[in-house]
Length: 380
Image (cartoon, rainbow, N blue to C red; front, side):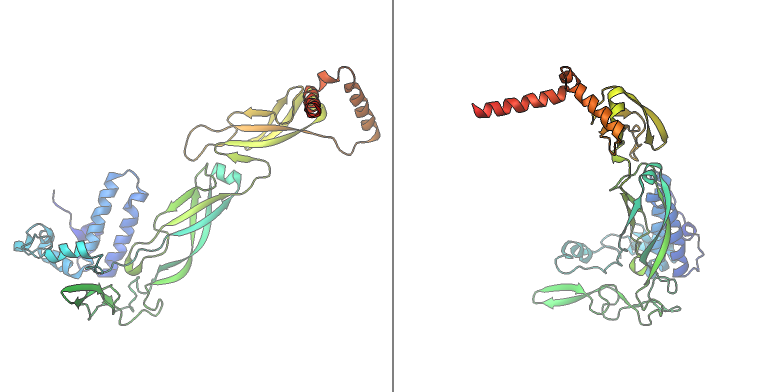
């Protein structure tokens, strides 16, 4: 299948300068990046085409060869055996390249140092439980290194560009003789980049990046929880000399809620009920994230009893069924009693202490029997 024209792929003219090519590449790379098009094979193929076109057209030698010979310049044996993609007999890979790949790490590397990808950033976003459960869109402001607009990230003053290093002639490496061996080391002049900036940009002072703050709109999906991370591709620090930007990771932290505690997809809450309701039974309103609902308290309910309200919990961001709300009953001892209330409770206490008291408080009887047996065993 015939390859598309590199200029057409990027949507630029054949006279386009490096800056125009770079802008076109950034726009298309963002559009077709696999992270933004998960599972889309067509977008992935398009992204590869855009990347290949950019790499050829931003290399002076490769672009000149392409302009003269087209895609044939990079095919096996192209240009009469002298193409960039030729075998050992052509102008492509030779024995020096092969040994450079094998021994590069041992002797300091044999290739020009690539411009560094931008650093990844992390931002901790605090959410309320309601925001985490329902999802929310929030704006965040982050300080970061961004590509200098004045020099388009090159570090060179407008109208100029980085020059090929005169020490290593663009290789990024210099050869040092040590007896029988020839050892390659990063060039001390350009520090392995292969280029030097003679006339640095006034805005970024030759760094190609400037410190700025940017505002981003972040969509938080429903069901996230503390510890979840959201990755924003390409929103980290800008790379050096046009290298790709890093990513931004938004770390979720859910604030403590006044009523609910969350455990995976379930919610828990404590429901205080008065002494009379716990003993006689009744009905009480309890809160849920969707509003109030009635909870029936059966007679003789004890502290710690759990009541499950199905489907009133959380639907996790990872999928699955909606969780439940578990209400734990806490029987509340009455406080600030008036004289009449005290008298009534005293009468109740006296009635419970009679012959029927054991039947009214079986747990108390069981406990007291256990204590008595414990001390009897000690005195034997």
